Image (cartoon, rainbow, N blue to C red; front, side, top):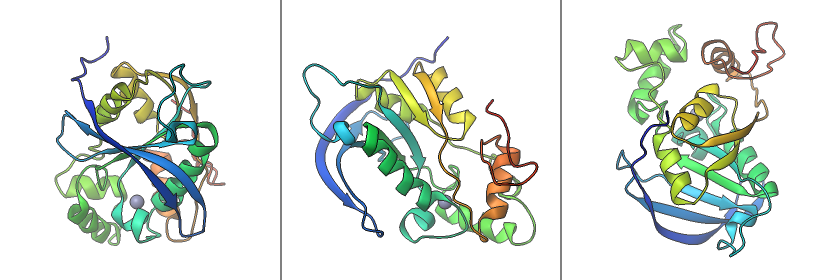
Length: 222
Ligand SMILES: [Zn+2]
């Protein structure tokens, strides 16, 4: 039985040409919303054929959807403690190629906030993993909710999607909110010396589908 989803509405939509540090450029249409349940300023970026105003007769293919949780340190400053920046860059290009939406969710640090995320980094440097550090700070292992993502999709008129994600929890939560996930497509692996431990933890603890080239790194989709 799907959750009853409170209605959200599109508040504004404006064209936003994007250009990344490596020179990659894409046209986007950025949407803001009224009625999102947590009151935060989440954004949707229409890319590819969805960067244009919606056509009268609909679209040829299902939209590719990437819910991306905000990571100020990774998305903006290129932090190598995580893989958020390269994942965001990859997602924009893959969505622009086929048409769809990047949902930029303002839930920093698995939902615990920016300062707490930095506190958790400090604990990780003493030997805890990313999940243990959040719990040690009195938070859940992962406090992210995809309810607002489902609200945004409905406001955009989207009920069936292809999902770009390695995280089985995203598909599960979206399905519970009544979104039909036709296929789940994995993102690439953005491995570096600085984030190897973080990615291994995500694969082990979060059942993410990441092939890190480690014996225990490959975990089948749930
Ligand atoms: Zn990050």
